[in-house]
Amino acid sequence: MKKYINIKKPRALLIINDHGMASFFVALTMAIVLTLIVMGFAMVSIKSQASTLDRQLSVQAFYAAESGVNTAINDINNFVNSNSTSTTVVSPPDNTSCATPNGIYSNLSPGVVNSQSSNVRYTCVLVNTQPNSLFYTATTSKVINIQYSNSASSASKVSYISSITINWVNSSSSTANFSGCGKVGSFPDSWPSAKCTADVLQIDLVPANALTSENPQTALEADTSILFLYPTTNPTNPVDIRTDNLSNQTDNQNGEIFPAYCTSVCSETINFNPADSQYFMRLSAMYGIPQTITITGVNGAGNQVSFIDGQAVIDSTGQAQNVLRRIEVRTSLNTLNNGLFPKYALQTTNTICKRFYITPPDNSSGFMGNPTPGAANYDPVATTNTSACSLQPSS
Image (cartoon, rainbow, N blue to C red; front, side, top):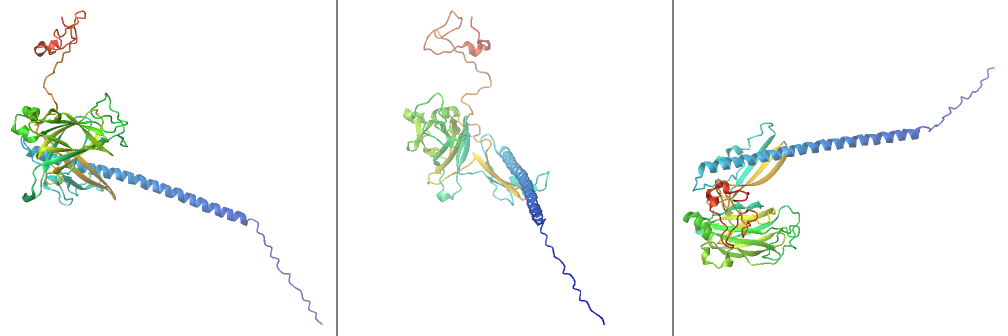
């Protein structure tokens, strides 16, 4: 008889061992963190490269825009030099189109590119030779042409400038301060530029027709208006001046000191009497502080005027790949006053000798002096004897 023995198979023993799982998650976390760090550095590097490239392209676009400005200035100078004579100035035309530049500005075509790279060019250069304001910086004397351009119809044409407004402030100061400008009429040895950020302006005005209808020397002596604009915080009325035959005026109408009202900038309006279409103005900052000066004008109808033969405003856009830079530059036009208004009060081709004497004479030192105190301190010998201009004692 057979016997069956039921042998039960032992169950498999499942041993769950979680040792090492923490290390796995730590390693995974570190890998993710390191990946993020690497990606972060990569992004920073990419952005840095992109920023560097943008700066480089921006500089190239700026130089391209400057190239357009220089080309426009060269075209203007060539036009003025070839079309103007010593007695007549022919105003250069405007350029109002980017696509089809005016004839004299053919070099400003958008197709003109930088010779070093086809991706660098000036794309648009506009020229306005009749701006409605004149902008200058003044530390020394400069002559400004104030000439009215009238493009209105003949029915409404007004051919004269009724007044001009001059705004100015220290161009090297970040904030305007007029608390220490001092009393109007007092001129200190040195200007308190820290407490008064606007200089005293000296204005010399002469109508252009006086220089052409009279002897220039006579016109400058008889028809020049001289005034001083003094910064102040007290409002004043506009300046009314005559610009013809000043000998008929009272003394305080020529060489007078006028208070100019200052808030964020200093401003003064000058009314012309009689009004004319063109003036020459010499403008000087008396203490030599750099000034940002803006001049605007109004005609007899009360409308803002545009000025000709003074400045040209050049608006240039440069491109380098997909980066654009746009700049605006003002340039003075050549032959702005046909040489009728001198650059200096006195100008000669030879050296001028000035001799100073002790009054009365100092015989002990051997220096000559003026024997007549109060008389003109003038030695006629110095005009004919160049050796008389000497610092050595005269015998």
